[in-house]
Length: 323
Image (cartoon, rainbow, N blue to C red):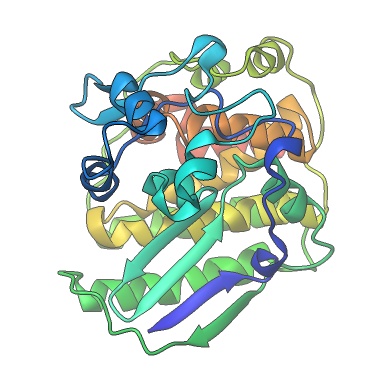
């Protein structure tokens, strides 16, 4: 299997209890089936077994979760901001989400793409500090390709299209704002080739897009309520915000043929930095609020398709205002 990773991936290291915004605080954590099966084998006399059983619950989606402690802290997060389950059972016995975060992993048959999410402040700092174009490292291992029902012809068409979008975003001869416009226009053309995309019908205000129903950190709400008026910077960080979203989401169109929403997400990602703060912390806050909340992300995906303020026409107009 071919493994693809961003060039900065190898430099990532969790700082655990030193983290300024712990991933063990703010979110409910799903208990995956494999982990649950293991917890059922534990000796009932173990303190950690008692604690696990006491906090297991179901959410409204039917997922098994760990009930959060006060201040939205994971029930296993101790006063030193370290995980008691990790200490008692080992890191390999924590839930899948905990073992892999902030990594995202997508398998496309013989190719596995791995990255790290902005929702981790350390990862956001790595991306922000990248002084150059985002590139990708590749390696081949002995793992067999994963079984899938991917449309091979569509997959390779999208792969070729993503390479073109990378080239558009990394066109040094143009300002980043113009690259975003070129990207959106190309995606609009590509979407017309792939399938119908309904005209936007939702009249949500642009800033209301970012007022999520589930608030994780009040600091994000404060930023949304006090937007700035900044230009789109011609910096590697601005460029690499868009690259992050294209790498993470674009190939998911192989499942729904919706490339335009994925590309609009990249353009909106850059606009977030112009309105709410051109720094790693701001994009981290947005990601933690949106990408890692099922409520907020489902709403955001719907608005990307349905909100008139996020149409290609209106996004291009907004980008031009910030040139």
